[in-house]
Length: 213
Image (cartoon, one colour):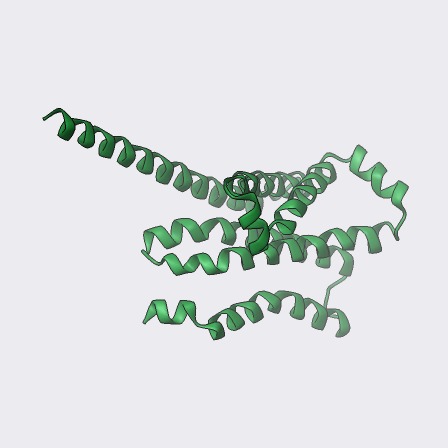
């Protein structure tokens, strides 16, 4: 039943619409003047939050599919990663359009002088090759190199958390929560890697023992 639901095209459509909902709500709040006293800050924080959330959701799919024995969850990982990039683009465009009004020199000066923007910009730049190589054709072309490249998503998420931490300065509760979730997901990744290595070593030991006898 669960597998049938996961592989259904309608499930993908439903997930797509759910991922689009935060952007739709932001547009609605913009046109109905419900963004608060500082609309630009609201848009910046909302798009930034959703970028980190989608990065964390992307990273959680592999542990979740292993723990829940639902390999078909992998179908949603690429979609989640692309949604993370989509919200990162909105976040970056907010900086370009509303904060700097397309003034390239002002943007570059901000990136150079303000560490939290430097880190955030680096995180965005690292997301670009991940988005470009997310197609099935690129996965086939790159082979094992694709997996190595896409491990950059952990670094991207970490930089996003640092960017948020340095931005808020006073109340760091939310970025610390993001950091704790990321640390947990990374620990899961290491645990699964160690488990697979241990299983491979055990299988090799049993094979050598069988040959010896």
